[in-house]
Length: 410
Image (cartoon, rainbow, N blue to C red; front, side, top):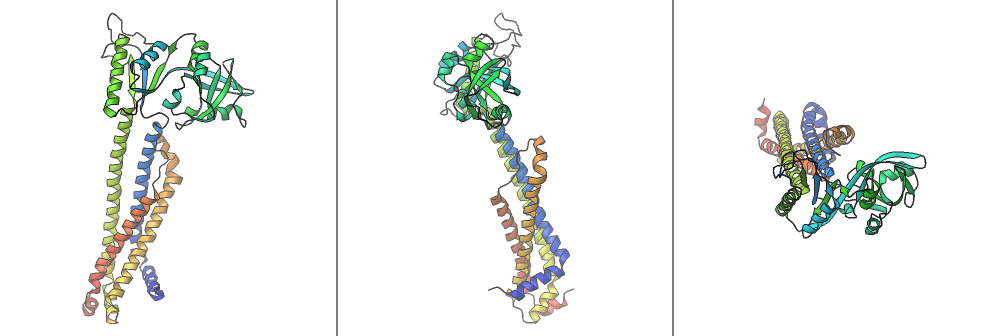
């Protein structure tokens, strides 16, 4: 049952001893504040890692060419390796049991215009499989298809921001964009989780790109995804085998690291997972260390408070107060201070992350720092329980002291 006199007495005690009440509250608030900021920054780093790989399939492999750095089989160093359509077909056929999707890529830069709007964009010639390798999501219209490849049609799929740049408030589907003096019909709009740069790209059939921009069968890169049935070790084995086969095909020395480069996302994904795990462990240690420091702080303060109120407790007992009532007053006061201070620390911590730290930390690769409310509530409850225990133990001992002993205490 609610005891008005009890609560009045508790608030009078807090008001009378403002310094110790503020000191107790500060210890708890600071612990929750620091806990919130640490976990928020940790989550911001995790978000950055996730965004770096958000726009590409996690089982993707990128095959890139460069110049040889080592002479081999009569060829001099410095030879440019150039992929062609036949190399794409070779990989597709040679490793068909290990490949899920595959596309070769032709990249150009294009000046695009529609009516009075103009801008420059990356123009990429692709196969239909590119949609799944790069995780493009069609939001209107369609993607490049086989018919477009076979007929070398002048159609394009544009990013969401390309549509916003050139078409302002109208739909781009069915409209024509001028790319370097040639008209192309827009058949699809896509979005990409990789960010603004990924949504300012224009895709066209690779056969059209090769005919219009070079009249050859050269490709800049070959992208593919390996079968989801392959485990991590098998995926690495596949990329190593692919590298050896291509070096043999182009007469490149096995020690040459630049002529043919094969990057497997499995390696990057594992490294990110390891970094994220390590970061989580470090933050947990620091975060819980902060909470423990807060618990120790509030415990010491509560022991001091009870010792300071020994005479008061003696008077209460002499006037007939029961041990239970004495414990209740100190315990409720401890819980009240801890709860209010914990909530204040939580609000300040969340406010710092959202209003002060958030935008400024992007330059340090910390994206959208934040922390789950369930974790914060759990940490606050931990401190409240600790505050209750911290108040209960010394109060229990003090309630057992005889009134005459308590009154003699200096």
